[in-house]
Amino acid sequence: APVRDVEAPRPTAPRQAVVGTIGGGFVPVKLRWSSRSTDVIGYWLWKSVDGHKWRFVPVPNQSATQTVLALEKGHTYRFLVHAYDAAGNASPAVFGPSFSVRVLEGRSPQIAYYGRWQDGRRGAASSLGSARGGRAVARLSFTGRGVAWVSRTGPTGGRARVFVDGRYV
Image (cartoon, rainbow, N blue to C red; front, side, top):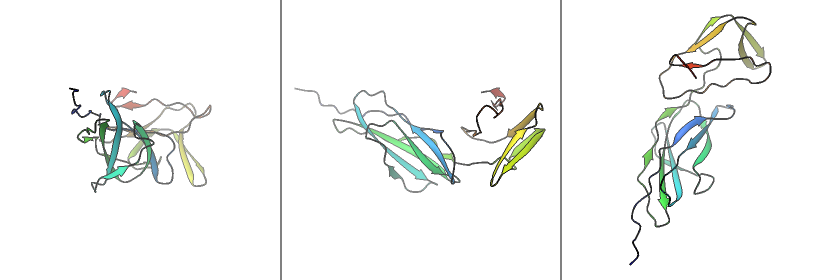
């Protein structure tokens, strides 16, 4: 007699990373998950915003292991994933960490500036840059699991060294 599959696949918790361009009060966040179970045929992704009811999140296709969502700044998010196989076994929920989406602009009082900085404004947009040849430091202190830094790039965009907890990253 054939052996019936009764073991549910085991997914990883959803992991998040900021990607793309921030705009209009939204931050593009890539969520990734996976499973070492070889018989997984699909996943269900769910989210909770500010601790409210869990809601299903459609993904590109049932076997997708990542998606990019535009998350509204100023809210706290938590995601969970279930994996399922062809035999109809579904995993228990695997929860990702709770995280807040915040955007600090260049002149936020939470960012301390040392050295020579120049302010560049063009209409509604603003930017900060160090004076030519000067050493300038911007310091942001926060408690959290991750941070993303968004900056202009290009041949005249300058250079930056980023340290997290005193270590060059």
